[in-house]
Length: 151
Ligand SMILES: [Zn+2]
Ligand SMILES: [Zn+2]
Image 1 (cartoon, rainbow, N blue to C red):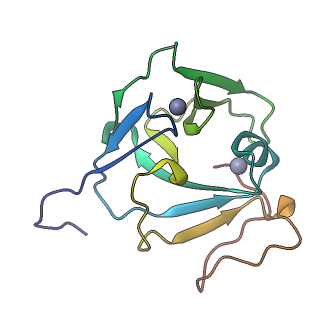
Image 2 (image 1 turned 135 degrees about the horizontal axis):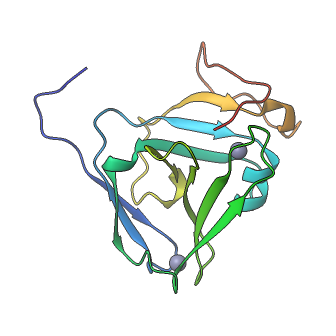
């Protein structure tokens, strides 16, 4: 659905603010919850809550250089796709990732957004096979809950 209002712009960045970004999404943002082991490891938490945008809608406005932005190439993925996880080398925040062969998509860690909105609701859960047993399903009817699927 297109809107006559101008595109919304959102900002975010890592904890120490060495890396900053802005996104100008063409549609309402939605969250993908991923329970995979890689997301648990790289986030240091029980799951990841990611937002996908087009790479053309994502722009680093500060940092982004090798002295402050690291890149870990994760090749041992179920999909076989190499996932590149970008993180701040100063404060350790995971910031965004992308998969080789899917250059048009950027996956942003929603916790790095400056003002997460309650409107951004999960639209899918991935890798439920790795989900912690104490965790309830995310709220929402008809949300696809994938046993294992690539982000
Ligand atoms: Zn930082
Ligand atoms: Zn994952």
